[in-house]
Length: 134
Image (cartoon, rainbow, N blue to C red):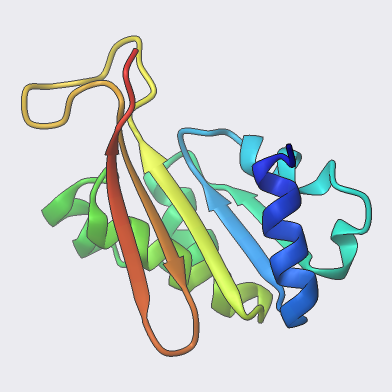
């Protein structure tokens, strides 16, 4: 079977779409996996690892008030990251991920394994909340 990154690459290639990725807890893993696919330079434009809140603000334009009100691991921040990387890279799609990878750093409200993924195009931005087991 095909790997997920190959399927994503095929869909982007067929639609002639471009993609940029903003990552926090994954530390560049998504960009790495996407660029391992031959021909990915046709659709993969840019990847940014914005681990700190300051990097999210400086690099992606995430409003500091969003980070203060919701925390870095939240749907609003994931959506702002996706929109920010899409605008910065001038791509059709922006993909973002933020979460608590662990082993520490979790809380009752935001446990280890909590991840938000967001996808943005020029019309709207969607997000998904995942709880990834340790």
